[in-house]
Length: 93
Image (tube, rainbow, N blue to C red):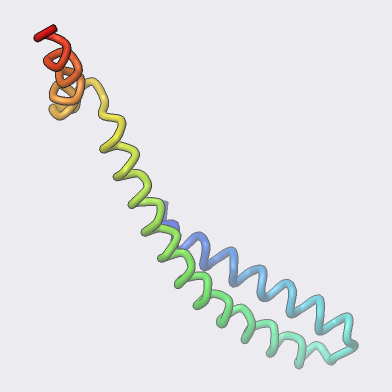
């Protein structure tokens, strides 16, 4: 599967094309004019979606890193340190 940024860019581009196409037809423009503007909107929205998708991808990566750091798994070497910390604190009582 391609990256999240590419998926968002594709969705933005197709949405821009569809919205521009419907708006052009509803306004009574010629087919040539509608297609030219719809393709332009698709390119512009694709570029915008690529930028937005890149930002979203980075945010998701940062969230996952934080989540994994705060909730280690059983096979994670840091889990032993995290799980042993409360036991050593109560051992001296």
